[in-house]
Image (tube, rainbow over all chains, first blue to last red; front, side, top):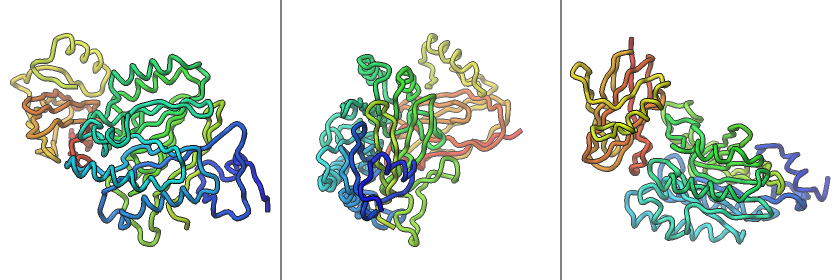
Length: 294
Length: 125
């Protein structure tokens, strides 16, 4: 048994998109590489949802937090890519859900936790309640030489980024060299994944066009409650699993209704991912984790 | 794309250019007397009627109103969409150029039942 293994090698062994639970591999110690780091993406926690698609609706997020805390090496940061809460028409209830969500994720060991809204959090009040709890809905930050851009395509209920934010994006990109490593977070896909189920961003193509001159761009998003990988030119787009209920593959079911809970395989289709990011190219290796160990 | 009587000529011309290559021709025009008008009401969280039957190649005017909040109508397979604004009547001229059953949906997030707000367009020969 190898007692120590470089994280990059470990992820190569794990394979792209493989289901691996690091803490479940006895004797393996992960060592950080010099030229990479990793973060965790969690998405679509839909706190406040109740219904047959998840009989453990009040427990799943807490289990996910525990699973992240149990990772042998903690990530540099955690990113929640929207739909933190399930929508409600009641503004008081919306704030209650956001508050409860915030309290639960405070239990994460990781010091740096970042948030962005999904349409369930923000589309009914243009992001007002979300901002009260988590601040700006679009922003940038830099980590280990990688430039991260958080785009808001949900505060406008028409599923648009909007001209003002697109101008902001253009100004931000203008400062970067065309080989700068860039990671973009959005909630909805920036491309037309399946507009028949509203899996699109009305002006997402404009953002992709702005990103296209940059050589090293990767996009992470949520919204569709399943793993999905797509290329627009050289730009990779990766959708994450959700943490409340999975949705069917695009067009493979009559409607986009949640996949029913399977008592024989509880939490099937739910999970989160580690993203191992190369600091020079922003190339990302993904490792998918279940909510609970099988 | 919203098409109502207040739409400016410039916008109409722009839209016509944009839509020129689409399979379905959608244009900003007042309802012509001979074209059938199909009234569709949007409300939380459905359309009435929820199923619309058309004949291939026969132009129709889809006329929308909403009884409550801002809604959307999106028919992706025909690249046809409109915002349905409270207090206004919105019209879409549609010439279906293919047969089949197609989904239309609300693409403006409108509340707790938004994700179930959709309908069917059935086009026959």
